[in-house]
Each structure stands twice: as structure tokens, then as C-alpha cells.
Image (cartoon, rainbow, N blue to C red; front, side, top):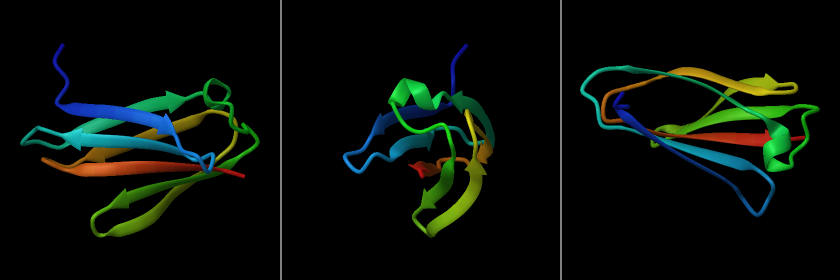
Length: 86
């Protein structure tokens, strides 16, 4: 199956996690994935999930335990998901 988006992720020096999404589609793409905080050695006790786009930063949710991301990626869109552990 060919995906119409690219996903890259990594842990930043400040301890935050950044997930970059880029769409190559002409259609809206549903994005649905879960991040296990233990895999990235961050606290599972909670934190914030933010969406960063060219238009600015928006709070998506506050997480406890696993971080579940469910959103829609617009055509030809680039979005960064910022995970900020507490």
C-alpha cells in the first residue's frame, strides 16, 4: 500500500518530540498513530501535544500514558506535531 504522506520523528535536545508530516496528495489524508513515551524515554505521566503550521502553533490535546494522534492532513500540507512532556 502506498502512503500519500511522509512521517519523520525524533527527540530534540530540550526533551520534546517532533513529528513532521508532509502530504503529497491532492486529497485530505486521515492520520492515525500512537507514540509510546517509553520508546523515547519521556515521561508517560502527561504533557501537551501541539500542532505547528506556517500559520502558527495550536494546542491539540493533553496526554496521559500513550500519545494518540488522530487528525486530517490537508492536501500538499506540512505539519509538525510537537510533544512536550511535563
